[in-house]
Length: 204
Length: 204
Image (cartoon, rainbow over all chains, first blue to last red):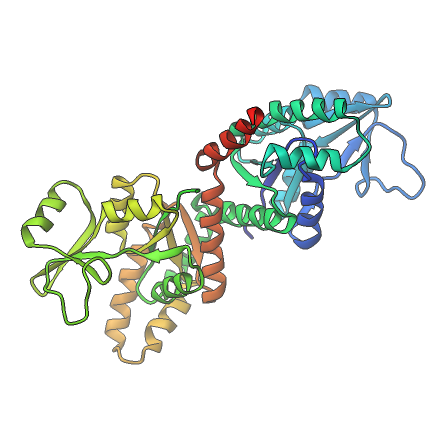
């Protein structure tokens, strides 16, 4: 079986990448989110390896030091992160693992897994992004302005990504990402085993 | 507007690439065949620049010498070829130009236009290819065997292409090529102007 791909999705706050990733996974059964590792205790009903990998702070720190965490963050005195071994094993089994992370994390994943595919979700325009940020209706002008400035800084990093998609509509944006995944899987380097397999019929 | 791509499609005799290319162009209005140049005289109803570019042998030879023909062949004492300038102009206007050519020609196009995307159409298996070659019903065993051997030699060149698609069904194969075209157009190098355009709103 053809291997899957690691797909890293980033984009500025307000661009709607969360919705895009949710729809991508919901409508494509060969796409999945990674299972994160965390140092917090399991809540009722949570299963190790399904909701999270529950590990100790010592294990977590060791994984960071060994470059075995693709990215991580601290939140309420607990660590959360993406374990490299789980991602690579899933990909080996033909799954496309989608990681939705911010720019610094994304570039770090690319360093640890060079064959990961990085996708930056752009707004159609800054005006549209501002409308979307304002659309939440809960932010003051000052906060919207600050978020827009952060967004501009993030967009300036976009050229470091492999692909740029535009979130005009969620469906179109998801379709573009699906096309990117299909194309990446049809790249010759991923099809050499298939070619070899066909040629071996020669002796069958 | 986002530029189009030059898509070079090759594959062994019998794999069905002609049908795939016909369906690709028929079902995607941003995909078109190139207009060829020829040294033969126009037939009734043929229009210069629509059916062919009708040029003299001297003009044709000069274009070959200047690397202005992406590929060409002689047939019944007349030359037929693909003029580079027409292809590049169409791509500039946003069209994806599909060239269906054999392996040597394909690699030559890639030399002249490095940003051209080369796609090799594979059969699902040699047995299936043999069935398709035999399915024409008009060939002797000896001819089928020879064609199969030629096909094997061609398949051995497949690793030199950018992408490998499998012609299991025409629809699936066309969908894969469409995905490749979409992904290629979303590559960051083709989207830099878009990013710049969005950032320029900053001052709007």
